[in-house]
Length: 236
Image (cartoon, rainbow, N blue to C red; front, side, top):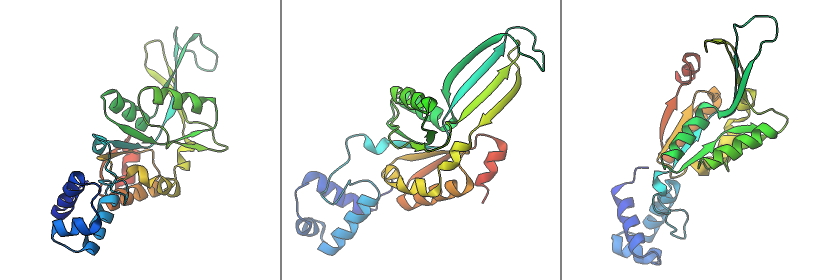
């Protein structure tokens, strides 16, 4: 969030006298009341004010981050003997919350940073567990979309006895529900954020819309490409 010199001066005046009228602020700033209203609108748009009632953000809220992208359940299976193709193999399995955006959000939260996650899960048990576990780590998950008729994403990996990957299946169609329209509905989450972190699981249209929204709101963006093929989505 970058403020002009006049916006910074006005914000300092509001901090000193939050009950001052627009006319009083204009007098102290040496400008017109109409100009003050224009600057107030800019401060609201940038998140420095939470509304025209001169409501200031909570202390430290300017350091809030927003992470946008995929979340899924990781399922890892490992054989306990040499793997034999075409038949069942004895082994062990483990489930754990995953997804690039979700993992980034959890690690930021565990570092003590205020972070909101914009992602999507299905209306199923896996989605319930993902939201519960992610919230327990300190992430704000109120803005995660619950998609109707779609299963929560999963990444299933089968490892051999030596822990080398044998095969993996990524079922992430639900991420396509994170459309430009869904992001537009959540634009206020981006308002006033210090950074947005976007992962390469976003579709090209969704990524383009997120970048446009972030530019409009003056929020800096970090892009985590996830993989070489998905990194190409940023090319244009």
